Each structure stands twice: as structure tokens, then as C-alpha cells.
Length: 437
Image (cartoon, rainbow, N blue to C red; front, side, top):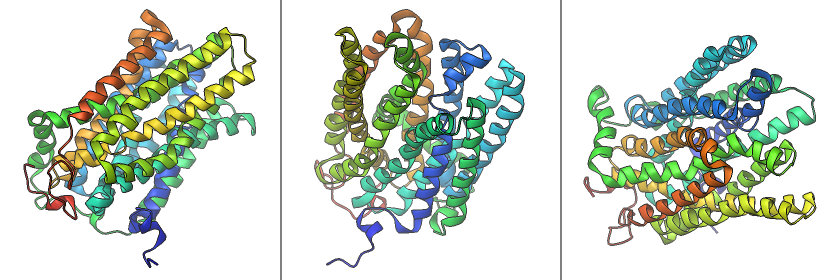
């Protein structure tokens, strides 16, 4: 019988356990607003669906920039310092959003404060992801990053959406008061991670010459320019999360106006999608480690998402059209949502693929991956703002399905990056892979 601690057998780096806990709480706070922001701004501040989409797009641009630099700055300063910066930005601009922008209903202040707050969570979350990649051995990297997404998705949007539902339905708090709850949770989560993690690697720069700022930051840009596979990582990771951020903008209207279902049902659907997703993140990380990162991303991720997203959208529409009881139609929708949540986890092996492209600079390699994550926050709402008035909800879903199919072809081309697969030598850690592989 193995004497290895349980967390290590599960693939969780034991020195970072408080980081996982803190990340989950932080992202619960960040995720509270996900599905209530558009209804709140529409009902109390005069925003249209398109304007709300534009606001989240501006926020998403900030997220994309911060996500890209979170990894490179982690190389330069160390992940912990980057996480501290992210937490500080989030708290300061959330206070500005709550105390000044919303109380005056100033569109300019709403865009400014909410947009700038977008720099916060990526620095915190993806700084921690780089910390994980710096500590985890290659044969457990897929599993370790899978647990990152358990903590991340537990908050955004799973328990975040559930917290919003409980706050308003059980405690009778309004939208504005619920946003204060999110601030408290973010502060608690940041404290858990920054105080609780004692691991030393992430407290120092991850590169030998941290004084060479231009080389450290430039490595990320060079990788994107010179390696087509890095650009594919960006595109695939963006496509992976586009529905998450796009659906938060237009699905509330789809539920309440097209289906005539209550908004609370959409919040429940969101919770189910990402609650089911949680255990499958480390599962598919382990599957990718064992059977192939690229193959898992293609079939369990991209193709499965194309099929199940179509089911999430069309099954409730068909059930309403057939005159089925709303309860039956919603139950079928929840089942489809659960399958979609499982499929989203199929993209987990993309993270170790990214690291394998430049293992001697994990931050630079992860910058491409993080850019894709942040890109989705901007691209999802942007697609809604542009195409919703033109093609409606059905057209948007068909666009997303097409993007998932394109992601499958790109992921297939990423074979040959995993140690021990497709002729690559097996190594104990990615840092042993020769430069240029």
C-alpha cells in the first residue's frame, strides 16, 4: 500500500493546497455576478443586451491582456507577487464600481471601473496556474492543471452562480447587495492563498536572469510569432470558453423571453453545467496524461462540445414547441447541460500542451494559453454584441458549433508535443525536454 499522502496520489501538489482553496473562494466571489450582471444593468441602469455585451467585451479585453502577461510576469517576479497584484486590482476597482459607478448610474464610470477590474482575476488565477506548472512533474502536469480547473470552475461560474441564487432567493438581498457579498468572498480567498501557501519556488522569479525584462516578456511574443502551434493553443482555448461568457449575456433573455422560463432556472442550469464539470477536470487531465493530450482535446473536448452545446440550446426549444410540461423540458435541459459540462473538461490537456511548447520558460509558454482564456472573455460577449441583432440566439449557437469543429482540427495538429507520445522521449519533468522540441 502506498504511503504517499492522499493529495499527492490525487495529483494535487501538496505545498499548494491552500492555494487551491483560496483560488476556489476567490473565484466564487468573482463568479457571483456572471449571470446577474446583464439583468441588473438592464433593469436598474438602462442597459440593452448589446450594451451589456459591449461592457463585458471591454472587461474581456482587460482580462485577455492581464491573462497574457500573468504568465510572463510570473517568470519575471514570481507567481505569488503577481497574485498579490491581481487581488489588489480586483478589490480597488470593485470598490470604485460599487461606491461610485453604480450609485451614480454613470455609464462612463461603469465602463471604466468594471473594465479596469478585468485586470484583477487573471493575474491572481493564472499566476497560480503558472505556480502549479512550475512545481508539478511532467507525468502529473495534466492532473495538476485539472485540479486548477476544479478550483477555478468551482467558483466561476458554478458556486458563484449558486451564491447569487441563494443570496437573492434565500436572504432576499438585491442585485447590488449581492455584489458586496462577492467582494467579501474575494478578500477571503486572496487571504487564504497568499497567507496559506508557504512553497518557496513561487515566491521568486522563475527565470535565471529576471533583470532582463525585455527578454522575459519578449519570449511570450516570440513564441506566438514563431510557433504556429502556440497560436493554435490561443485559438482553441478561446473557443473552449466562448460559450461560457457569451451565454451569460444572451441566455437570460432566451430563457425568460423565448422559453418563458424563470431566470432562476438559467442560474440552476449554469450551476449544473459547471458542477458536473468539476470532477471531470482532473479525470480528463489523467486521461490525457495516459492516452494523449491532443487526442483527448479533439474528441472529449471539441467534438463533444459541438454536439452537447447543440443539445443544450435545441432540446428546451423543441420541448416547448412540443408542448411538454415546463418541468419535463427543464429536466431534459439539465441533462444536456450536464453532458456539456463533461465535454468542457475535455480541453484540460491543452494546458500541458502549451507548457510543452517552451518548457524552459513555463511562464512564456503559458502566456499563449492564458491569452486564449482571456480572449474568450472578450470574444464571447463581442460575438453577442455583433451577431445577436443579426442572426439571433440560434445563429449564435450555430457559430459556436462551427468554432468547436474548427478547434478539433487545430487540436489534432498539436500531436507530437507530449513526452512519451508520437516519438517524443519520455522524461520526468518538462524542464528536461531539450529546447526547440
